[in-house]
Length: 482
Image (tube, rainbow, N blue to C red; front, top):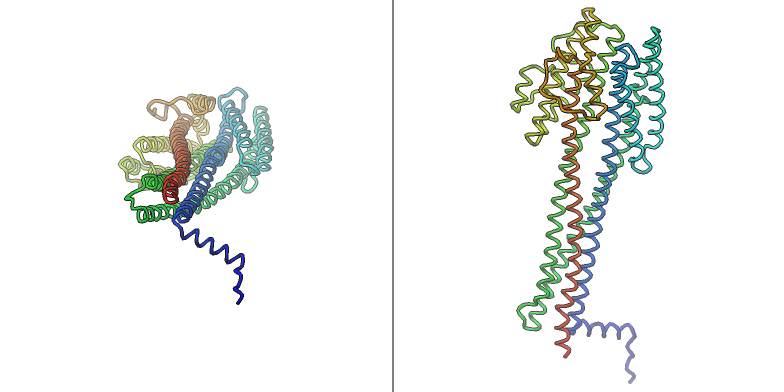
């Protein structure tokens, strides 16, 4: 009788089964499984954390910097249009302080535009920034034409100034509208970064699964060694298990801290953009008052305490003494961007700075009301004097030439400083609050980057898990085979 000859596949399976059935084979298999889990732990952990770190660094140093830069550009452009109106109102002479302030604002806007082109995210808004640069050049030419015509006593100067202001504010294709379109493109880049962080979160889920798998394999291996070799514990396997726990726990703590800081930075970023938007609105409102006086228009019937057009987004109702006192006590009974900032203030310095902004804004409203009342009564010269007090415009020039300007002392009675002084006081306080939030945002994002970098360094401990496992099982394999 001829016995069947086993196939090569069956022989290999039999040899494999005998290998797995032996104690050395089991130990080698367990070592390989722990090594595979460790490699998965290292790959998913480093992949997720490096992706998150690179994304957050890009968001902080490029995307958000570009968006905030565009907001600054928007504010400087609005400030330039306001200064142009004040310069025309002062007579359009080349050496007046409002004219020099206009030139400083245009220079600041031009510098910001150049920096926006340098820091823009790749393949974003290049054509729009070029169009804005060309439109800004045309705007400057129109303003210059308006000043020359005004000095010559030509009524065409007003038409040129109106054309320049229209080019700045025109919906759709105006300069400010194009700047807002650039911001929208950058915001889309920020949204894509959020998607990348979501992918990193999925990788972190795989990391957690790998960590649990490695820990289970190590416990299983420890129990097998204890039963087979009658040993109560294996110090190297215990150290490997402890290393796995440290890696998973430490990574969890680091990621949790980074996520909380990122959430905090998102709130700071939103507040930062809100304050820059508030500055732009304030520049527009102040410029509108000068344009009203240039046109020689009448303010008409104005209810007591009514707010100037365009500032309703800052505070949605007349800012009375009662509302101001309640805000100082922590009861904000109005809406608007300044109300939102008061509610969001998370510390005493932030709240004090927001209250200073609110008080300065109230002072600005009071003087603006007086200017419009003078215009409504037909007192054009008095209204112009109240608007362009030389002390106020000199302060404005100092502010712009030094970018932020020196801190003023206690607020003066507005009759001494006129509308220019009151607006610059309000603008300065708003700038100080903006700087405070910018510093906080930068510190928070730098903390996120340091936390993620430290957590990435912790992943190197994953290699010790496999090394300790091999070191712990090798003597047992040698002991059994001997």
